[in-house]
Image 1: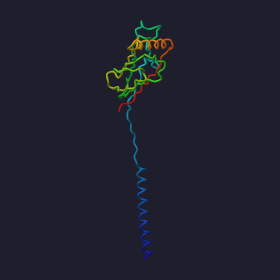
Image 2 (image 1 turned 90 degrees about the vertical axis):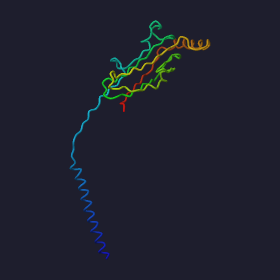
Image 3 (image 1 turned 30 degrees about the vertical axis):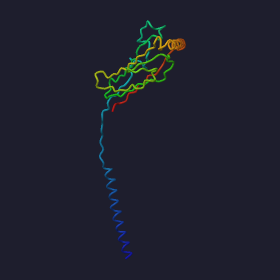
Image 4 (image 1 turned 90 degrees about the horizontal axis):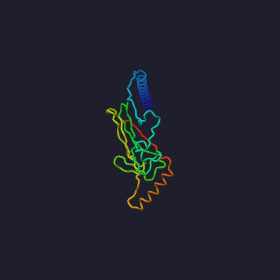
Length: 192
């Protein structure tokens, strides 16, 4: 009886082994006979830049839009104001562009120089961190102008003591600051 059971188990194992080998062979053959083809897709063109008018980098000068009568030797001073205009250009893009603009590395800012953007006042450019939006690729003009107003008041403060203190600060800034600099970082990503 034991020999008969062993033979049945051996025959059953042999049959299972044959079935398993055939299944592996069929699967293997399936991958060997798989057809191949090619596919293609056109990729949408991408274009995003700060409008630089042909320059390698964008330089913003606060004195450009200022009434020149208020400048001292071509420099800003208390009593001057103007605008910073940053034009983001998506011309040539075939997809919408989500943009963000921020400022970094602000150095030598006159203390009483202030900024206004989208109706909110700021004491420095680095505080402005909400400049985001979308440029539609199919818009008539796929550009976005970011406009920031700046002002260096002639007298800053509400009381005579505040005004006197700020006048002294302005005098120090005018005498000690030779150049106020900052970086503009504009980032564009494909809109989802």
